[in-house]
Image (tube, rainbow, N blue to C red; front, side, top):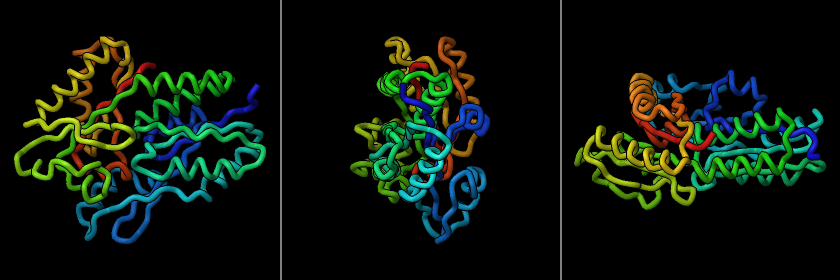
Length: 283
């Protein structure tokens, strides 16, 4: 037996409040810094306000990871509530030090088994892992089974996203290789994805319509390979565009469950307004 298991994630999973509360998922916020002032994501700044503030900001916004002390405080609190194991699931270690800070903090807590889990992605791809772990923990399933289920989801998982331009990613240092400098000049819509935990250019496509069609083709292959049962359309402050694509996908691929999510402030700092993404995995 593993005793009581708690599930922790960070704010970049962008879990709906209702899901977080129902599944008792504990969330550590990352922060965004706009014109010298830091705001804790979701606690002090929501997505809509963030995108408005960025339009009038004097400087390019940046993001910062939670300090190890925040993790230590939460882990100590969970230990005092009788938890014996914590699974803490975070955005890709290739784009943030959050995972490493969680892992380091976990090693400092005596009498608590802290398992830091690198989603290798972010947003609802990370959220899918956190919700699965929490559902299984609430059902008192053994730790080995939970980790096994997370590994299966991660193995099946994929995510592709399209940005209006690459400036944010390049300025934030989050695009590996900093390719496609002329993308915006040539009206190219770059398709990005995670490769080896980092954000890389997948393909350059001429129009948004072609970019979305290309992502749909990749999804089609995933469905045929039985690695896509549930998917999230993720939008950067454009719910109408996101919902329109979600409806189209739900009609085209009725065998997949499609839901809508969003790029919040921290990820929005790097992708910019108008980004659109799709992530999928097994249930």
